Length: 505
Ligand SMILES: Cc1cc2nc3c(=O)[nH]c(=O)nc-3n(C[C@H](O)[C@H](O)[C@H](O)COP(=O)(O)OP(=O)(O)OC[C@H]3O[C@@H](n4cnc5c(N)ncnc54)[C@H](O)[C@@H]3O)c2cc1C
Image (tube, rainbow, N blue to C red; front, side, top):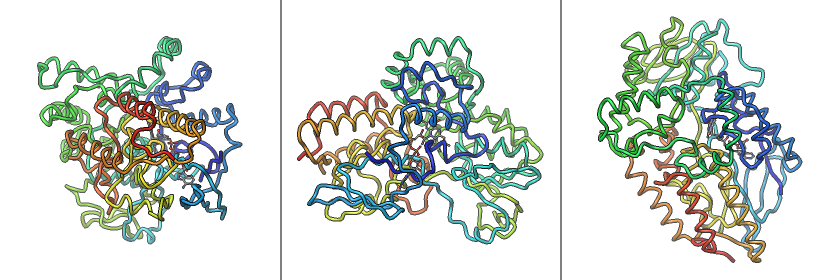
């Protein structure tokens, strides 16, 4: 086995994303590997949601403990891979000029790894410095006495804005659309709870694997519309006070299906924003108007809303103040007005899920290119495999639960499934496994049919590919009605039936 990694060392997401305030927002006790039971007992997280350096330290420790580096060639980008139907092998090219052959290619390129810096006119003219949050300098950036712009208001911006506001002379946040942010409620975890969790890790692993979203949150088995106003308020308060993904993953079962139920939930958050932001005009700008609650990636916040009460923080909202028109030598022009900056931080996210896979320049049977096969959005079978691309697997790729879950749970499920599959191929003397076109078409139809029964398509979200110019509008993940547990069961059934839906040769 040979692993290629573009970065100079391990860590991936936690190697690249070094912006101030970068931290996980899955709780650390489940944002980790579950296959090293001893490490689950030994490792002590400092907080509920540790910061990037601590997660990176954990990943470096795992790599060392299991001697993983010896199989990884760092500083090497895969720039192409082509399937040879004569030899049944993939030819893989790297940016170091190497070409190697492989029976299998496993694309573990990450769902959120392909940075999206918007193509703004004039960026090359800017006299100051600019950074994308996922490519921050290792030495950090000193914002003291600087006029800083943050472009974007997604999950990353919600983490970075309060941090930069602490030291910058002036921070201006450019918002295209407001988001529903809920409190993270970070802090030290009660040592008794840590102990109880360590004693029950087997139970935790079973529960998160069978859950909806890979968390220990379960939806309230009731319509929000059936609850009395008092009961609803109590439940919303409970989830709000719990913090984290409780509000998203543990809410009433119909909030992503019924607009009326969703409105009740959205109204609760809008009230909270109005309570926390002093200037009513700024509060209204921070209140989402264009999408239902929960249909965009849930940002978790710590003092995000209060940051807009500070004298050194300004919000420039595209719909009320005018959208960004261009980057100038001195800063950003928006709504006909020029704002001057020393530093621009692009918290503009990623070309999610399909971006890093297309960048692999994959060619399957008959020279078929992945970007052509996916011209109108992703087409996969189970979010694991692609018709016409034999012996290629994707981990947390498009049309799998991926970013709709606590991702490590989904990563482990895919890794286990693929490992078992390859093992089975060896044992049964098979050389080729390939998704059948019909099974793939049925899967794509299923993915779209389910999501179209929800409110998700109503948002211009990165889940829908809407953050990237010219990206086809298509739902990028898979929303199983029974969550990651239901999806796991389905994948296991496919394997148990001799890999139904695949052609084996
Ligand atoms: C700031 C941030 C916070 C997040 N927080 C959470 C969270 O709290 N909970 C959660 O569940 N998820 C979170 N995520 C999602 C995160 O992507 C996953 O949790 C997880 O890290 C994915 O792991 P991965 O190994 O699949 O992908 P990645 O961590 O993205 O790793 C992919 C690796 O592939 C490499 N690569 C890509 N293309 C190539 C190529 N062509 N050649 C060679 N190497 C290549 C990249 O350099 C990268 O190191 C977060 C993402 C970000 C960006």
